[in-house]
Image (cartoon, rainbow, N blue to C red):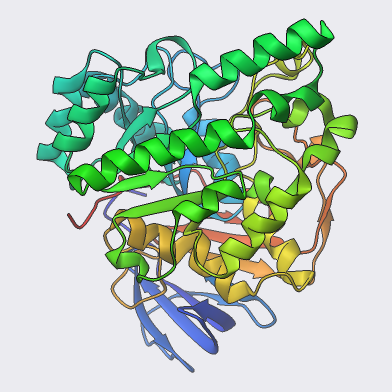
Length: 451
């Protein structure tokens, strides 16, 4: 099927979850977009009919933070494998981070990633421009491309290689000059190093449960506070990634509508699900930066998510090989693979009564589209791209090696039973996934932004 040919679909009798409401009805998909939404739609034109009686129809999840490892780290993952896992889990669009090899520090390298995605990604895609201590000109060139790059990424704390930006003059210039959303990883490197040295001197050999002691609440707060000071100084558009502590929450407000906020944030599913009590069982499997911390932080995150101090839910999907995770604590790689299971995990909490399905849709789709000003996606609206997910809330399944699509082949959630199954995923009007079968005849599209 060529790019300009689309099947026509009519989804019948679905429970449509959209914009804080549930409505029973039909959705007609034509030319890759949502043509009509109604109580009962009859179309004289030929259409593939999907009976969605008993199913929930959601806008596709938009994940604003993933690491798909291509180019250069493809022994862990690549754009094809991880986007395939994403659509199986109901994620129809992703925004991918610059810490590949080489890092995306130039527009030429950035466009190479877009080209790979155009040829291989089953989901819609965007890529962040990376920031180093010496690529200011390239970063500020993104101002001319606001409509086709999701944002600028700054590691204001520990990362790999030359991705750590610790030059205050450069930070000042980026916040002063960038017209794009600036997404920050906030951890204070000097505090991490001091904590690590002190604990090594005290204990000698370290273990996974030491991770939240080394990467503690204070160092996250200090770095987030610093980022906010820069943003307030210049009225920059700041988005702080993976908030993990109760203390950081005092930096954020729910007083403004999301579309009016200049400073927004993200919480990740693993910080809502795991706590430091899980290191004994899972060890390095849940080693990630920022660290999974004591349970009171998790409870505070839930409270802030429900009252809108936390703006969006994402994964920070960061796959490593099983062997890389089996090394001793200090050498084991940090990050968890999550993009196939994020929606299912949040639907588990819907079933538990912790959050409404409308709120999940808001935080995983609507709010991400609003936060990043994504063009024509994130909502079930007539005229929007048909990024849609059908979910059977009464078909549980258990995560196992046999049904994991990540290239790394493992998940910290193995053995966990999801209460709901993604039955169909539509990306830009193409049914890329249906009842366990992929249709890889079309790729996703590059995300565009209303800026």
